[in-house]
Image (cartoon, rainbow, N blue to C red; front, side):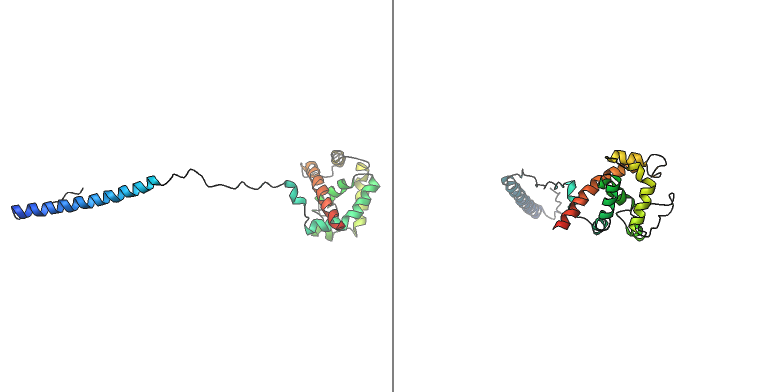
Length: 201
């Protein structure tokens, strides 16, 4: 409690004023203590919350869901190249998915640049600019003449990439090229299923 100083001008009046002030201060303190006690009482009456906010677990996504639909570019790749590349695979006696994987990887799913060059394999002039062909069939014939005998009759992606990387190497720039073709094979298999399903509907 703050100290109360009272100027005394007379014995009796001083005692009366001091007593009144002390009494008023005591009353105010008692009222404050009552309010504090009341608030504390109400707080104690309230049951303590023991439940914590429930957090919804993040939804687990199936990584295969991304293959349920194809982009317009992927769809155009299969629309334009599936038949000629399938025939090419049949002529070489290899799984068509190996040829589709190589083509989609090297041409960026037959992107605008390679489409404009009719170059479904992104073939370059000794690592320089991509070659231009008159049409897709000419590009396929060029590839078969230069690389066909390497992969003829192979039946696995490991053998396919190993044969192509036998010197002179098909790709001399990317050390992960073989692994990337392996990954692309899985993608092509799923994307082809989606494309074929769409065509049958």
